[in-house]
Length: 301
Image (tube, rainbow, N blue to C red):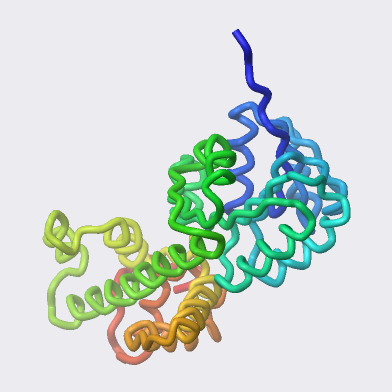
């Protein structure tokens, strides 16, 4: 019986999401070299079997290079540093959340060097990364998607949605729904409180109806507990909303609700940039003096 050798992986970006994603790959038996600007974060994976790259070039001999970084400019900067050492035929999988145009530019840049590229942003947060249940939205060639499928499946549920750049569009659609729904959920909590209903009982009453969602489940509880320690940070949500509005402009469409939601997060980021995005409740409370949902205090409340 012939055993197919697993491709070697380099993983750039060992942050809140990247760390559990990389650990799941190590648990699945992949050889993985980790790089992070803060080297200590990469070194934390050594006990799981990873090796550490001191620079992006050091990790560039891998068959598959995965990037999980903060934004498009960081992804491009790191890949340009690694590019001279990337071997021809390697596959770069960018799992960061960037602009569609940034993903398309990277596809073209790498193709000139004989290197393949797919964009594969994710949704599901830290819990999804830890549980390997991430929704993974992939843009790229069918052949490269099939090549990446065994690796991506270790981290979650990958779906190809179109050519390069389309993974980022799908992620923006996801973030549009998430950002707007969190905002509306906060308004519902505030309305229940102001109208004399128990917000916790209201949330329990509507579960199972059409308003049921993971956002109602997870972020509804966060709001009741006033637990705004991140998950997904306010500044990251705002970055995604700005990218959504940019994509809409490029597609020559208007998204009025998204524009209003972005404005709310724009205000919140000036006071609570690293809080969980469910802290949009705080922004709404500031517009409604005397109203406050939940009772538990923490440093973001």
